[in-house]
Length: 259
Image 1 (cartoon, helix red, strand yellow):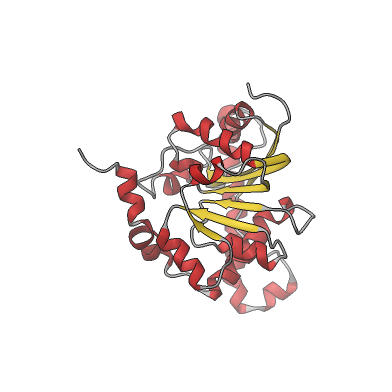
Image 2: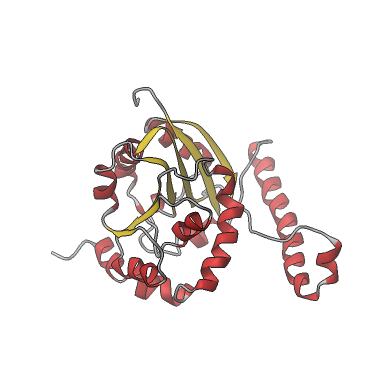
């Protein structure tokens, strides 16, 4: 009777959801994003600069720009939004493709050494997620890695992210992510918090009035993080809890058959 509601959302996603919140992509935003990507994902990048890397749901291509700036010349991005791809191409970001994610993955068997899924799986219906991750696994070369970022259901503040986009389906935790990754043939999953990129304590920081705001925020976050963990430990018991509103996972394509 009507167009699928997600198709209706994504048709104007950039104009009605991205631009009002973040504004247009600029060289200054690219440079700032690069520092954040270094902080969150730098440790997972392959040593070989010629490794083919794919950012699935790349938006306007900020992560692809970061990868190219670090010498990964075979990094590419794919996104369903023509407007977002056009915004990245206007800034000369290379190898951005306007294509359906499933369609692209389905024709790229064993092509990539690393695949990024940032802010993607929360948009996928749970009933379809395993099939989608099967495609991601198939697009990875043997020994290839998957890095994903998604709302963290174990965080007291995850609702701001999960419910901040009408197309989101659900949040995940390290245990539910472990479950779906194992079912999709991934191994050795490691998880890390999506920590805010804040300055470390130093005399230089104290001497700079412009850094005091960041320093106070860093102190506040340190206290709040411990309080969140205290709440979980009081109810559930001691554990290595990740309490940031997003969670990052890195897993390797397994060699065996999927369960």
